[in-house]
Image (cartoon, rainbow, N blue to C red):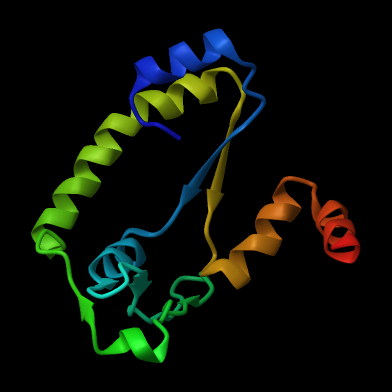
Length: 146
């Protein structure tokens, strides 16, 4: 969601928001994913070369997030954005965290915020998110009718 509080207040004035999902990713994985971003200089496609496998500690499960690799014809044409450095990414994350706190509080105070800790990549996270939203059967029906 937009992370500036005034947008939330405007949005609330024009539509009913039932639920806001805050997808949370552990910071070491988020940093690795941001630093793994690549763009194909030929077609402009976005990919991610970071393969994350963090061993669980203190009872936490292992955290696995596969890379999003390009097709063979893009592999040799990948470039990194000049501003995708560790220092710049950390500063972006600091600013995002600072600016998003009031928005999180805005929806938390209204009982509309669902904090969802991502357990891994899409294959690991999607079923758990559907379960958290009580949409497990709904997704199965959608797949069957497609």
